[in-house]
Length: 431
Image (cartoon, rainbow, N blue to C red; front, top):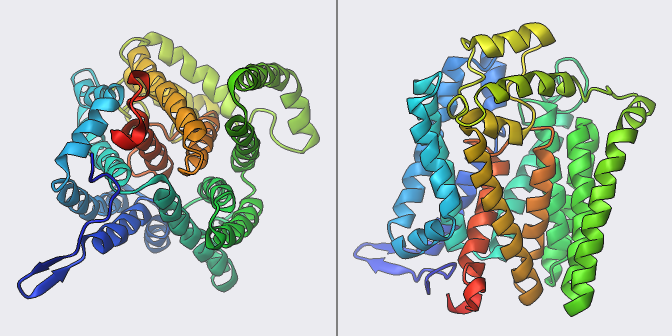
C-alpha cells in the first residue's frame, strides 16, 4: 500500500507533461461538486419549473465524467482499491444486494438503474480514500462545501427570487430546497470544526471562515435537522478531544459515562421532545414524520426479511406508497429515516450489514484518533456520529448522487485502509 495517498510523480510523455497529482486534486473536487446537489438541480428547476423524469435524466448524465475519471485513476492503483474493498466487505456485500434485489424488486428497472448509480458513488469514495490522506480529505470536502455555501450567500444577495424558497419559508441558496442547504451547512459546520482544530494556522483561518458561512446558511435555511446535527457534532468534537487525551482506565470510564449519558438523553428525548417543539412553535410531529414512520413500519413488517428492492418502494406506481400518500395528504420522497429506508430496500439483512459496517468504522476511527493524534482523524469520528443523527429524520444511507453518503463512505473506506490491521496488531503506517 505504498501508493496510498502519496503524490504521483509528474511524468514526461513525448510532447506532454502530465502531473497526475494535479489531475487527481482537480478531478476529485470537480466530482464532489457534481454530486453535491448544488446549482444543477436548481438550474433545471428554474428552466422547466420542476424536476421531472427528463430533468432527472439530465442530472444522471453528470455521473458520466465522474465514472470515467474515477475508474481511469483507480486503474492505476488496483492494489489499494482491492484492499479497501476487502476490508469493507460487508459494504461490498450490501452493494451486491442492491443488484440482487432486482430479482424480488417491485420495480426491477428502477432498482437496477439506481444500483449502477450507487456503484459510481461508492467507487468515487474508494478513490478518495485511496489517494488522499485524512487531512487532505478534510481540505477537499471543506473547499467544495465552502464554495457551495458561498455561492448560496451570493445568490441570496444577487438573485433572491431564485435563492429563496417559493413560499418564502427560508433560504435554499443554490440547492433545490432549504433542507438541502441546511444539510450542507451542517456538513460545513463539521468540517469547519475539523479545520479549526488542526495545527496549521492557514487551516484554522479557513475553518473560521467556513464556520461563519455555515452558521449563517444554517440559520437562514431554518433547517431543524441541520441545527440538531450541528449541535451533536459540537458535542462529539468535545468528546473525542477528551478521549484522545485520556488513557487506560480513564478512557474506559469516559466511554462508559458517555454511553450512559447518551442513553439518558434518548430516554428524556421521548418525554420532553413534544413539549419542547410546541414551545418553540415547531410541529410536534416533526413536520409529519411521526405519522409517516407509523405507516412505513407497517409495510416494513410485511417484507421484513427481503424488503421491496433497492430504492423501489417510493416509485409512483407502488400502491403501498400511494396509500401512504393518500393518508398523509403529502408526498414524501423517502421514509425520512435512513434506517427505515434500508429496511424498505433490503430488509433485515441489509440493515445488519450496514450496522456491521458502521460499527466497525466507529471502532477503527476511534483507534486511529487515539493512537495517531497528529493524523487528522478527529473530524472523521465526528462525521460518522453526525451522519447517524441526520439519518434519524432524513435519508442518505446508500443514496446515489448524495454528498452526505459520499462523505460517510469515504470515511468508512479511509479508516478501513489505515486501521484495518488493528486486530492483528499491525500499525497503520505499515499496512
